[in-house]
Length: 162
Image (cartoon, rainbow, N blue to C red; front, side):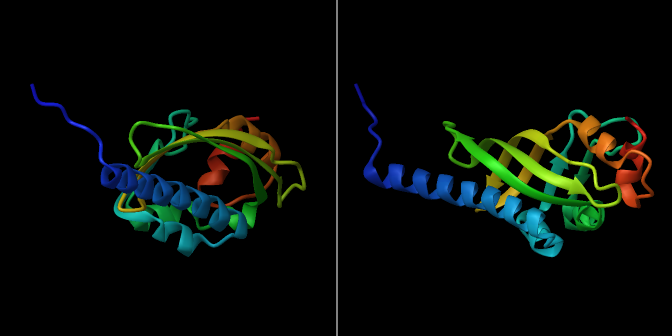
Protein backbone atom coordinates (compact mmCIF):
# COMPACT_ATOMS: atom_id res chain seq x y z
CA UNK A 1 0.00 0.00 0.00
CA UNK A 2 1.36 3.37 -1.03
CA UNK A 3 0.56 6.50 0.92
CA UNK A 4 1.05 10.03 -0.20
CA UNK A 5 1.76 12.73 2.29
CA UNK A 6 1.81 16.44 1.74
CA UNK A 7 5.24 17.84 2.21
CA UNK A 8 6.12 21.20 3.64
CA UNK A 9 7.23 22.14 0.11
CA UNK A 10 3.72 21.37 -1.23
CA UNK A 11 2.17 23.41 1.56
CA UNK A 12 4.57 26.29 0.99
CA UNK A 13 3.86 26.32 -2.76
CA UNK A 14 0.11 26.31 -2.13
CA UNK A 15 0.37 29.15 0.39
CA UNK A 16 2.54 31.15 -2.02
CA UNK A 17 -0.07 30.68 -4.76
CA UNK A 18 -2.90 31.64 -2.37
CA UNK A 19 -1.02 34.75 -1.23
CA UNK A 20 -0.39 35.85 -4.83
CA UNK A 21 -4.04 35.24 -5.78
CA UNK A 22 -5.36 37.23 -2.83
CA UNK A 23 -2.88 40.03 -3.51
CA UNK A 24 -4.08 40.26 -7.12
CA UNK A 25 -7.59 40.68 -5.74
CA UNK A 26 -6.52 43.34 -3.24
CA UNK A 27 -4.73 45.17 -6.06
CA UNK A 28 -7.91 44.95 -8.15
CA UNK A 29 -9.80 46.83 -5.43
CA UNK A 30 -6.97 49.31 -4.91
CA UNK A 31 -6.64 50.20 -8.61
CA UNK A 32 -10.38 50.52 -9.19
CA UNK A 33 -10.89 52.78 -6.19
CA UNK A 34 -7.94 54.93 -7.30
CA UNK A 35 -9.21 55.09 -10.90
CA UNK A 36 -6.01 53.44 -12.16
CA UNK A 37 -7.57 51.51 -15.02
CA UNK A 38 -4.34 50.81 -16.92
CA UNK A 39 -2.85 49.16 -13.82
CA UNK A 40 -6.12 47.32 -13.21
CA UNK A 41 -6.04 45.81 -16.71
CA UNK A 42 -2.47 44.61 -16.14
CA UNK A 43 -3.70 42.41 -13.29
CA UNK A 44 -5.34 40.16 -15.91
CA UNK A 45 -3.81 37.50 -18.10
CA UNK A 46 -3.82 38.26 -21.85
CA UNK A 47 -6.94 36.11 -22.25
CA UNK A 48 -8.51 37.18 -18.95
CA UNK A 49 -12.28 37.38 -18.80
CA UNK A 50 -14.69 39.38 -16.65
CA UNK A 51 -18.15 37.81 -16.40
CA UNK A 52 -21.47 39.25 -15.19
CA UNK A 53 -24.01 36.52 -14.35
CA UNK A 54 -26.69 39.12 -13.56
CA UNK A 55 -26.10 41.38 -16.55
CA UNK A 56 -29.18 43.40 -17.47
CA UNK A 57 -30.39 43.73 -21.07
CA UNK A 58 -27.94 45.76 -23.13
CA UNK A 59 -25.09 45.09 -20.70
CA UNK A 60 -22.28 42.69 -21.70
CA UNK A 61 -22.36 39.25 -20.12
CA UNK A 62 -18.58 39.10 -20.39
CA UNK A 63 -15.55 40.97 -21.65
CA UNK A 64 -12.41 39.13 -22.67
CA UNK A 65 -8.82 40.16 -23.23
CA UNK A 66 -6.98 43.26 -22.12
CA UNK A 67 -8.28 45.48 -24.92
CA UNK A 68 -11.94 44.72 -24.14
CA UNK A 69 -11.30 44.99 -20.40
CA UNK A 70 -9.78 48.44 -20.84
CA UNK A 71 -12.58 49.58 -23.13
CA UNK A 72 -15.18 48.33 -20.67
CA UNK A 73 -13.67 49.96 -17.56
CA UNK A 74 -12.01 53.10 -18.93
CA UNK A 75 -14.94 55.37 -17.95
CA UNK A 76 -15.45 53.92 -14.46
CA UNK A 77 -13.45 56.70 -12.72
CA UNK A 78 -15.54 59.34 -14.52
CA UNK A 79 -18.78 57.82 -13.22
CA UNK A 80 -18.04 56.52 -9.73
CA UNK A 81 -15.91 57.41 -6.77
CA UNK A 82 -15.73 54.37 -4.51
CA UNK A 83 -14.00 52.98 -1.50
CA UNK A 84 -14.04 49.21 -1.08
CA UNK A 85 -14.54 47.91 2.45
CA UNK A 86 -15.25 44.82 4.51
CA UNK A 87 -13.09 42.49 2.42
CA UNK A 88 -13.46 38.88 3.49
CA UNK A 89 -11.79 35.93 1.76
CA UNK A 90 -13.28 32.44 1.92
CA UNK A 91 -10.84 29.57 2.10
CA UNK A 92 -10.79 27.29 -0.93
CA UNK A 93 -9.11 23.99 -1.65
CA UNK A 94 -7.66 25.49 -4.84
CA UNK A 95 -5.08 28.09 -3.76
CA UNK A 96 -5.35 29.89 -7.14
CA UNK A 97 -9.07 30.50 -6.59
CA UNK A 98 -10.28 33.52 -4.64
CA UNK A 99 -13.80 33.82 -3.30
CA UNK A 100 -14.33 37.21 -1.72
CA UNK A 101 -17.15 39.20 -0.17
CA UNK A 102 -16.81 42.96 0.08
CA UNK A 103 -18.70 46.22 -0.08
CA UNK A 104 -18.33 49.61 -1.67
CA UNK A 105 -19.25 53.00 -0.38
CA UNK A 106 -19.24 55.70 -2.95
CA UNK A 107 -20.92 58.26 -5.12
CA UNK A 108 -22.16 58.41 -8.69
CA UNK A 109 -20.35 61.54 -9.83
CA UNK A 110 -22.97 62.63 -12.38
CA UNK A 111 -25.80 62.64 -9.85
CA UNK A 112 -24.21 62.88 -6.42
CA UNK A 113 -26.30 59.89 -5.36
CA UNK A 114 -24.79 57.18 -3.19
CA UNK A 115 -23.35 54.10 -4.79
CA UNK A 116 -23.24 51.54 -2.00
CA UNK A 117 -22.95 47.97 -3.16
CA UNK A 118 -22.34 44.46 -1.82
CA UNK A 119 -20.33 42.03 -3.92
CA UNK A 120 -19.36 38.40 -4.08
CA UNK A 121 -16.53 37.63 -6.47
CA UNK A 122 -15.18 34.36 -7.75
CA UNK A 123 -11.71 34.90 -9.18
CA UNK A 124 -9.46 32.35 -10.86
CA UNK A 125 -5.79 33.23 -11.11
CA UNK A 126 -2.84 31.91 -13.03
CA UNK A 127 0.70 32.84 -11.99
CA UNK A 128 -0.64 35.65 -9.80
CA UNK A 129 -2.75 37.19 -12.57
CA UNK A 130 -6.53 37.15 -12.93
CA UNK A 131 -7.65 34.74 -15.64
CA UNK A 132 -11.38 34.72 -14.86
CA UNK A 133 -13.36 37.11 -12.69
CA UNK A 134 -17.04 36.37 -12.06
CA UNK A 135 -18.63 39.52 -10.63
CA UNK A 136 -21.80 38.99 -8.59
CA UNK A 137 -23.15 42.48 -8.02
CA UNK A 138 -26.53 44.18 -8.23
CA UNK A 139 -26.87 46.31 -11.40
CA UNK A 140 -29.99 47.93 -9.91
CA UNK A 141 -27.82 49.70 -7.34
CA UNK A 142 -25.72 51.26 -10.11
CA UNK A 143 -28.81 52.11 -12.14
CA UNK A 144 -30.44 53.90 -9.21
CA UNK A 145 -27.31 55.92 -8.52
CA UNK A 146 -27.05 56.96 -12.21
CA UNK A 147 -30.80 57.40 -12.91
CA UNK A 148 -31.37 60.36 -15.22
CA UNK A 149 -27.69 61.13 -15.73
CA UNK A 150 -25.96 61.44 -19.08
CA UNK A 151 -23.22 58.82 -19.00
CA UNK A 152 -20.97 57.35 -21.67
CA UNK A 153 -20.15 53.79 -22.50
CA UNK A 154 -21.49 50.65 -20.94
CA UNK A 155 -22.91 52.50 -17.94
CA UNK A 156 -25.48 54.22 -20.16
CA UNK A 157 -27.12 50.81 -20.62
CA UNK A 158 -27.72 50.36 -16.89
CA UNK A 159 -28.67 53.95 -16.07
CA UNK A 160 -32.31 53.46 -17.08
CA UNK A 161 -32.97 50.24 -15.14
CA UNK A 162 -34.17 52.08 -12.03
